Image (cartoon, rainbow, N blue to C red; front, side, top):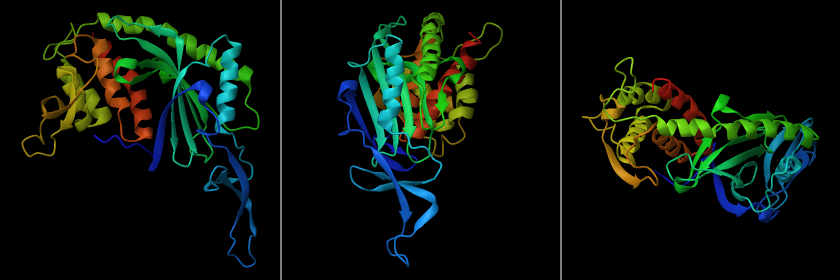
Length: 322
């Protein structure tokens, strides 16, 4: 399990920072310039259909875009979002943040944790409301946000449970704080209401090797071998089951001859990491945290995002049987 992160093949930088310290020294700005070839004949003829997006800090081109593309700076996307939050009475100056961006800065993912919104779902580990902002200047992703919960003890992220909520907005010349305020308010209120779901999960008991349903003989292992394996593959499902069963993550031995034909719950896993805050699972909440650990600790940013959005769907298939 590598700690080196990439984002669709591009290396990334990850920084823990307070919002008030985010400035041009950590978040680059970009300009749009003519798309030309200095060695052309004649030189510097501009492509009439495309522009080049250039990182102003180092002068390196990061993308070509159409003439109609509206460039939205990362800082502008952040500022308009937090202006909307301020209008709703939410403070952010002292908020702890994690900033993930590609080395040249063309893609940005900012996670903001609000100190006024925390809760304990019943296991003694505090969860923080987290707002994720996404933006790119290379057309790879639109400006958008998600609201979810962050479990500090093990650095797990959990997206909003209902409908896998994410707001996307195409790049336009003007992003409206009033529009964002309306959207954010709805997302935040729905996410805050989900505290009761986490508490309900805390009350739903699970046990390794025992049926999880009162109406049939479906076991936790059946769920791992079928639903989790279909969603994440056998190797990752085996890792998830290892955490559920023992609290340890590790390397699944599916390439070994005696393991190849086994179901995920029967595959051996070499223990590597004693997952913080994860004892052997006793409740559905413990299972959710096990899945969130797996999703939040992936080698690529895009895989991490996708798998974090998978967790609510996986938990729905589990808890409907409890």
